[in-house]
Image (cartoon, rainbow, N blue to C red; front, side, top):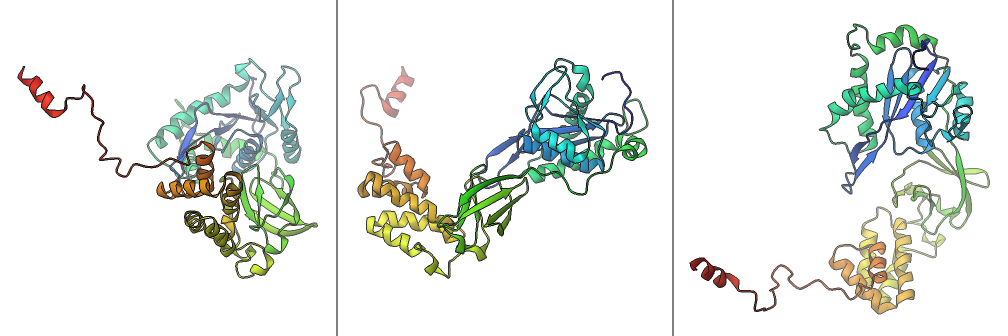
Length: 388
């Protein structure tokens, strides 16, 4: 494909940059390194750049749909590199596409032709765009810190606008000028609705009025009247919808934060406890029966949650540990967790699993003295050595 002319609106080249970008989780301080999607039109070299959560097919297709929306139209041909998210089996003559990518192409009434293996000329334009992204986007943002993927992408979009208006080297025209003059009018019309991957699964509503979406390890609330019911969950990149007997009973924005809760307050039975065999008081009574340390642990677990129902699963786990290891060991492990300010089911379980339930912090670890030993001479010995 290299050396051939690029008619306006004909080719869109897509790939992931080799270098990732970072953002920091403000709650945990964890640094997330995320891949960066790059798409560039053949004739104008007008480009789109987006940081994505992963290189999985759904994130790749979401970024590709965002690129088409950014360009305001659809090219005749999309040319990806041989990405796992795009190509099941690479072949010089008949590559096998991912089924979801085929569905994507059908939705947008376009075609996909992966770059040929070991033919760098097939993807030279997008590789050039990646190098330009390093210079025009990565470099200006290198000393800035971001606290979410959305915040990072806002900064990328701002630098992308500046890059598009910068003249080509040794030329007076810009990418945005060529795009507006030649490329945009040649693009095909976008469909009325964007393409969305839909997945589904059957789950049971838990006693804490939530279902757990295993793919994200995230919890979503359901009205308390459906506790114990089997529900159908249909979810896309942005939305989680929960159905019971074909009726929509809950809808949430999708959140991929693991072990966290998305909760609608009206779904909770806090003022209607007759619907439940569980309540905060029920858990506290059971914990107090085992021991005061376990009660303190359960209280701390409830204190860390906005709604009490969100703590039920963790409290169930703590009470289950007493049946596995006995009350005495659970009391000791709870005491340690409280001393170390780690009042969580996960930490207590790890203590018991690793045989650390008898662990104790020293009364004053900073003031503890070294044991006596003939080779330890102390300050006086050092002073004598100076006089020799």
